[in-house]
Length: 429
Ligand code: SF4
Image (tube, rainbow, N blue to C red; front, side, top):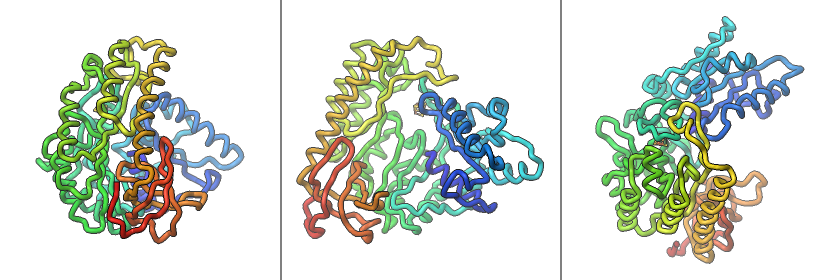
């Protein structure tokens, strides 16, 4: 979501004359868009500001703005702790960036804007064209969360659940498609909770499906409780919704899910999995796991491993629990570091085995690849399979933006290597 936000911030500040620079040294304004999800996020921000300070030691100081979720969590504390920072903007306030900058230039008055004002933000942004011209583009449809999982900082940094107006999203999607996007990834902290006057994520996908030059639709990140039948049923007929469901489960143990306040059980998760598999056996799952959550026992971990075996997740994110200040789980006693690391290792071994197995199974088959760009070293084209796996192969630039058939010759954990196949061949894996 920060990538989407950064692009929108850039679309906004262009209106008051800012352009991106190639190097840090050339900048007269430095904006750091921060994420609070990862460990030690706050310290990383101050470290980064220290780096900027060094770069500009013998030059005139740039305007320094910290935006995003760390800004939201820290607000005026940032201005006190690091006087090199001039402005602080929370994720629901970046529509105010131009006024805040202009005000600062006039009065040199340091400000923090951290109100939750998602309606005003999207209203303002809807009047500014989305200039992203990538083959695969992000589009935020929903922000914030009301679920309050005990480990998560999102409800505090992004605020309550907010769904953007349906037509506002379609207008922005049209801008993206008109400027060349072939894939749209719908974003939200709780994307499948999207609900604008009764219109749900399923309605949105079905509307987007009608854009002729849009080839692929994805969405992330979902909560199992919002995986309603209308959304599940879209997988029945949709040609454009990709058969890859990213559905975070966090743990395979009901006891831990309860302690996490996830509000769903493993049985309910499996029901969703089974329903989707019945609709389309090609559908695969990916997930997020928190390992060594406070009180996790060996038996809880074994339940997680058993779930991984059952679902065969093909691509997942897994981390050791680390407390986020201000969350309900932040004061709980944490599990010994060595034990936590061992558990993470065991879990990742299993997850990576699945990933490698899935990629190996595609060798010597032909798959559909959406070509996104040429790699930086110019050697190969880069694209993605229907399951989001990176695919590298040789070809000319005219293929960028097209879905082509690629024969997979080789693979590793994260990448498929192939060659352009006969495009008339109808058989794809
Ligand atoms: S549902 Fe997701 S975003 Fe909301 S609190 Fe839980 S983990 Fe955080």
